Image (cartoon, rainbow, N blue to C red):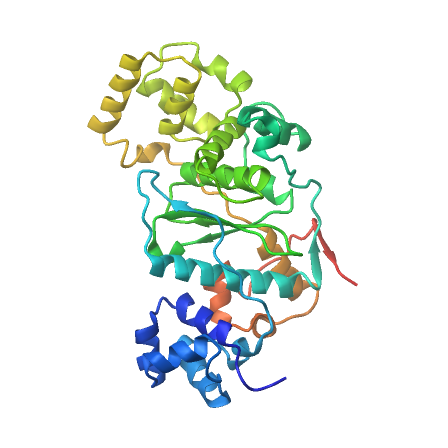
Length: 362
């Protein structure tokens, strides 16, 4: 293997650390013009610069010698609060860099340990169903043999379909979730950990909607379609309608939140979609939301517990517990420093492997 680095990975390391080109160039002792030339394959990424970059970006020098293809931004990047439409380019760069890091890690981890999924993610393009998102959501629940009513743990449900889920602070941005698919690997959904647990569930169902319905080019309707899918998937019409047998008010919404593990706002919008509210009733309820500041944060006593993802952590634990890797060995495999295993994946030296849905690859 050549000691010269791969320029794409120089850019990924820089963006992963949240540095713009000028800041990184100064830290590396280069002009911005020279760093730009290197990142664009116009000047060599020499061995001595590899060592400097490893120190500046806090990665092993082997990180820059990998042969992985670097992937571009996915279509599923959207604001945490739906009314916001702008996310800084710097934040997007950092998120995409993290996604590439995670995909490279998945590729290495899954060479020796395979995730066995009892279900698969169906491909049901929305155009093939004439825009009937409710039907698509019902078909997914049927194919996965989900019981009627609320889904107790949405994260484990998607992991049973082979989807890898991760939590991240998303560079401190307003992006609430991202779906990333790389050839030959399970689909990856990364959720913004700064969301409330109920919103994380909605975001996860939203991202599932993208995976199921949107495999082609993005469309102006895809975000609304994914929102509709999430609502129908989490709260099917036939199952939730009986819960709205009395007048819809804040008390009822608060009572239903822990049952359906959905936000009060989502439940209110579901009631509206079922035509259970007049415009005046809906307007009055939103006014109550504002007066009680529920729009900003729902009552803390109704806060739901998070659903931690386990599949990728189980794969890493299998390397440690069943394949004899040390934490240092695992970090070497992924071309990161050991402390990143904790910050990225929550892995520590005392993990215990669960592994019933894993298979060692021979």
